[in-house]
Amino acid sequence: MGANNGKQYGSEGKGSSSISSDVSSSTDHTPTQAQKNVATSEDSDLSMRTLSTPSPALICPPNLPGFQNGRGSSTSSSSITGETVAMVHSPPPTRLTHPLIRLASRPQKEQASIERLPDHSLVHVFSFLPTNQLCRCARVCRRWYNLAWDPRLWRTIRLTGETINVDRALKVLTRRLCQDTPNVCLMLETVTVSGCRRLTDRGLYTIAQCCPELRRLEVSGCYNISNEAVFDVVSLCPNLEHLDVSGCSKVTCISLTREASIKLSPLHGKQISIRYLDMTDCFVLEDEGLHTIAAHCTQLTHLYLRRCVRLTDEGLRYLMIYCPSIKELSVSDCRFVSDFGLREIAKLESRLRYLSIAHCGRVTDVGIRYVAKYCSKLRYLNARGCEGITDHGVEYLAKNCTKLKSLDIGKCPLVSDTGLECLALNCFNLKRLSLKSCESITGQGLQIVAANCFDLQLLNVQDCEVSVEALRFVKRHCKRCVIEHTNPAFF
Image 1 (tube, rainbow, N blue to C red):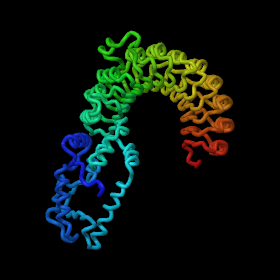
Image 2 (cartoon, rainbow, N blue to C red):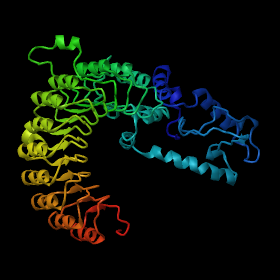
Image 3 (cartoon, one colour):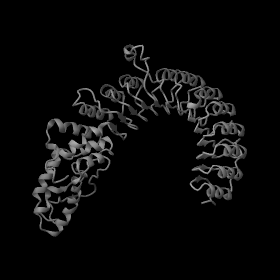
Image 4 (cartoon, helix red, strand yellow):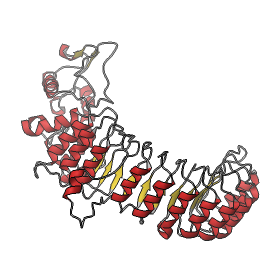
């Protein structure tokens, strides 16, 4: 990569080079070191050749695996197909006198300009790279190797891609990061492997054994992990606060292992320190599993249970008994949640700031009244698709939750201009309002909202029968408002 570095990382030695190559091989397919040495020797042999007479050694037959683009990425490599191609490497500019070859050497000199950056600048650049790209950088040269393993860059591991052998990558990385503190990686705090479908329980067990200081774990979409692996992580990582297992269909519970429960002292209470838990699309989660989660994760403040279709009002009752500090709760698309469930949720009182009950078809004005009466500091409510909500529910909500900033009552056909008027006259801080597919809404209701809610930033009136004049009125009074509509005459 530059004249300043002299040797490639391949000359570092057996111990250091093997780790870097193992990590990269688990994430991409790059040319071997022997192939690089051959290319280097060919460069020196061609120092006096011209562009019109390439060396026979550089005439590549089709499908030769050794010739890929310089980055060595399996996703961006370009194989030679269809015809034989002659490749000529530009020799060092100090040996050249031919003007055409001097022109060919200039891009190489420009690429080396990154070597002029000081170490702290390169480390800052590296901090924006995902883990697999950072491992590739470690193979460039000795200087980049030392900078790529700067401890400041390894507080977080981010692996992406469906083809990555995540289990092996995590094993190699944790082994390298444990060199200064054998068997323990004290610097690693965040692991994000979302969408890596090849992650299994073995990879999570590696994290649990080596990363006691882990605080954040995101494994969304990794459907091969099971309850046992999650139990190991929460038991061996006592500081874990953020856990995202959305889309992990085999996960039905969050709890401590039996061994961890026995070792804990009675004063500890056998509790887990998780505050943020996302179990969206964990389809097999049931009330009993939620009961266990609530009993062990009493410090929860953010809980997302979207499309956990087996949950009922009974599960929410357990949740309110053990987790009184919840600020954000989503039970969207939980079709068995009804007004009785909202009565339990209302026990959170002023602590609740965010609530999503979208497409809970059994919710009516009765449940909305419970929430509005006791949760006066509610800021966000998503009730889209709750067809049992009427103007009476919206009115009660507007008069009791005056600090409401975001409201979605789309696909509520019984809400009309009367409910909008009450909303506009009480919730002056409203910033986002969705009325999509509200058949009873007209332009008159929108004008009342625009005349009172000057801070409105987003208005969704798609599939609503509103006139162009009403939309223009909204735009004049709420100048920063983005209007989502389906009226072709308004633009």
